[in-house]
Length: 552
Ligand SMILES: [Zn+2]
Image (tube, rainbow, N blue to C red; front, side, top):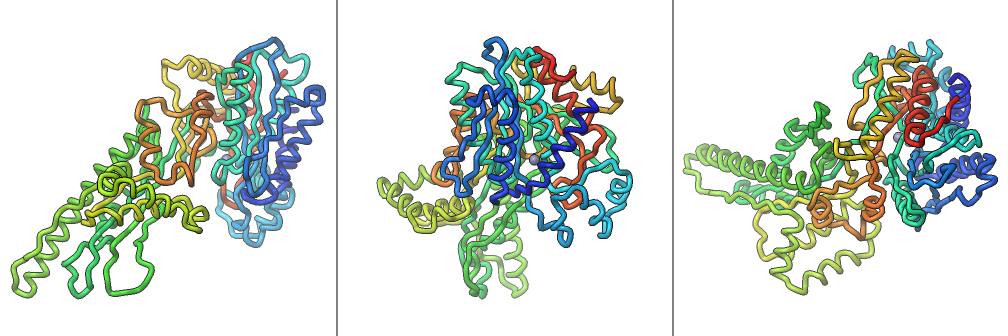
């Protein structure tokens, strides 16, 4: 293990020196470097056709992913995916230390001169941590995969399954690398008749709370949706405040009903998601005027462990309905109190705004507009700026643009999904591939615990959104239909390769190195665990799945 750990540190450090911020030319640079490194391996010198540089179709940055296959020694239909992302987040957070952000040698010294938390100062002094942008998320993990590829390709290694390594860009962006890779992988699987039995990622793992001494391996991953609400009110003059229904007032009720509500968490086996959290709230007025807002828009990051898009849509609809009822009750109460100030009886009564889904909006529009609906949608989509809009804003433009043609302009809320969608993945007892992976991971973790003495816990959901999500789709009936039919951006502004993901459909695990402060300038990798236990667990898991020995 010692030799492996030292080589992993050296390789990870080299990878950090190649700055590969998402959306920059550095992404192509690091891909080329890793491709060259793999191409020099005797295995790929002998089998160059097994090392694929796959250009992302239509990618403005000219990025590629690498798919490198080491074949089973005897023909086998089983394939194991080993996945890593090669991009990082930006480096401006390093402020004055930015020049050294990708220099693991100098960075700790530079950081020491800055104001740091006591934990970070102790970790620098201990010498047990390596600093640098991407060292933890996830160049150490990529280095471990590269070395596993090298070891598994040796003649002495009697591989019983095909190992398919995918190194992808844009994980910190829109997952364009993974989405291109899954299409190529499903084509490979179909062509060769292979079945992917497991997907292993080596993205980072950290403490659950400060001072947590446990280390974690995950058998599955969290998912995410972006449920969005268009609120249509009734504009009024500020001088007649109670004669309309301010869209901001309604949106505020939606916000307080949903934002951070623990009742909306998904809990599976005692593992809870984060509650939904607001990522945007705005009204749709462009100008200053003394007219109240007619429209408002808000959306929420909604994490899932078990809820499928149809279920999330139903819960959102219930919560927005509740919010509308509460808002109207409160509005009427305030109107009564205001009327009493001038000795009047309250005169207004307010209808509760209707709440509909995007697919119901389309049905209503179709009934009212017939063939004209298609023309209206076409007109919105062919606007010169439509393709350049943020996909959340193009979604809103469609909802808003269709709604304004309805004869019924009374206050209402339309609930829909904006991109992106990341499916959650979990292993259940009936899943043969999942059971095999769970056993492989459990054995590997036990060996690492016994040999190295770490406290290692296997959990069901990798808690950070990652490319792993695109290894499997929910198969529950109606789940994906509810997503597609309620996502205005689909397919022009956002689309997932559903057939390819369904074809791959594999259970997943994340076996990551340990460190702290991902996406912060104090991002650091712990040598302990990351350079001994993590590669041991990874290698042993692959060995179980492939029925061979890789590590000596
Ligand atoms: Zn990552």
